[in-house]
Image (cartoon, rainbow, N blue to C red):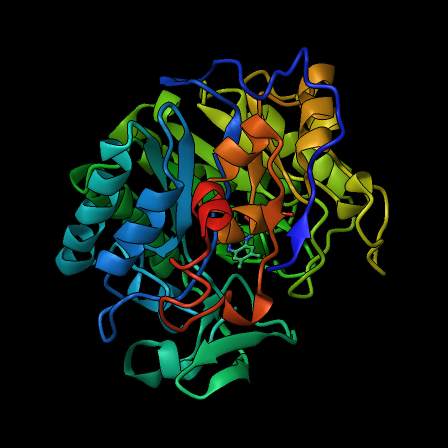
Length: 381
Ligand SMILES: Cc1cc2nc3c(=O)[nH]c(=O)nc-3n(C[C@H](O)[C@H](O)[C@H](O)COP(=O)(O)O)c2cc1C
């Protein structure tokens, strides 16, 4: 297997391997496993299974934090066949084996609570209905159904009572996450999904108190968040945002004002953390076409008073840099965790990394999921 080296930096003063507290969660190191959708639940029912427990168990470390793949809270919140839910009892029971596998290794795990909003297809909706979102705005993207990647179905706008029902679903998801043995929850307000769709004015054209000025567009996020905080206490709740995301036809007329306001309002709660996905350009990955002014962890760190998790294109060296600078309390890694079940040990020892195979990211079986080699077994083979 091809390798990506992470050798060559000076780690005498490494901060990655120092303890940190994220709200009530005390960690031994600062390498977080980012939320990663892998679409391998038992269908029908979107039920987490033993293979998933094995996958998470492989990646758990003593004193480390895993954030689960995005997990759907409402029956109309699905957009990808095979993604897990947490709205039924069976789904909740399925998660128990996963949280146990992580705890058996001395690790912690948060549940990332999700509603895809307009990013869906009728085939995935109750009774084949239309996907729902803040407003009926044309956008181009793909959902995953039994027919594979298919263009989304044009959504309809949510009524006020439906908005209230989804906010209740987020709370119910938080309750189920507690019953399933998670250590906390992360509100998925990133990546063009429902909460992000309410935040940004490209997708939110409402004229009621959930649309219009920034203060109104933030309302849905805060009301969903309050349900999570009521169940868990704020120090076991995080929020994830992508202030620079353009994927899914996203964008805002004033992202700095919008996400600055979000960070300010989140200060009122005393959350475990704010999780910020960095613009890729900061970490020397390819420049995206619609790239404008980035809003990075560094800027939000000056507004948000609690711990910041930073994600997006990090190597071990880049992670060390942002930690040294003090702009983040911990760094989340995505793709490297897909292909390196022992990523933490590889970083600790400067071992080379397994390359990831994109073809097996979404859906499928054990291949590209639980069969990536651990470093020691690879060298002994
Ligand atoms: C296969 C895959 C699935 C992902 N699923 C999610 C998800 O469920 N929730 C989420 O917030 N981000 C998701 N992301 C984004 C990652 O959490 C992360 O922010 C992104 O991969 C950038 O980090 P990296 O450069 O370390 O991979 C996903 C990314 C990949 C590659």
